[in-house]
Length: 227
Image (cartoon, rainbow, N blue to C red; front, side, top):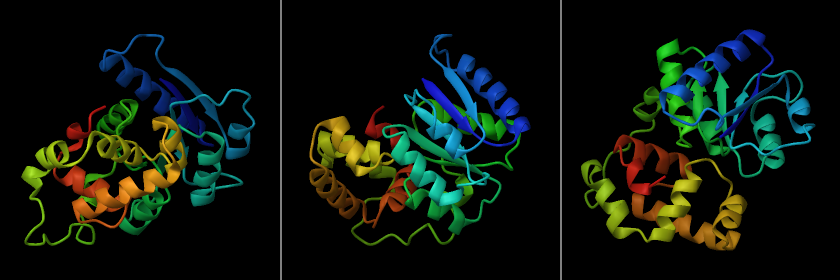
């Protein structure tokens, strides 16, 4: 696992690195499995000669390019990497915008050490982290349609009703990979990825990745997607 942190505050660097190392040891990963590097802004990160990272932790507020524009630039420069954003702002609309832009997770900087460690533990395992307060917020939780799969049955639905390829595509989409990267990873056309996702969203009764992400997390059904 190769990890890059992009943040302009040295205190955040040191604290996040310490937590990453503790979490890394706690999940029983090999000592040499984690490479951690830090940069102060997007320009410096994109100037790195070696961009082979599995996970990028990107601060929302950076000098120079910031916010959703920074996320987009990093997605282009570090194609294939999961990019998880950290932000001092944690309103529902803010989180929704970040996730809809393709981030592979959102971690509020207001978290205490225990919650931050739990979030990092999840993203180090290449799983998406979304704050529980967002997943359960009133504007996200939908009223269930009469014929919609119940939350307690969703894991079985994912395993029994979706094809193996659809589960693969959904799992990668929920990691924040763009359609083009998913296509390359699975050796299928980008258009085929879009077709798979459209069918999956329809099956889940959602409109987009954010809806699918919240649906799967509300049902605690992520394990059914493997990985």
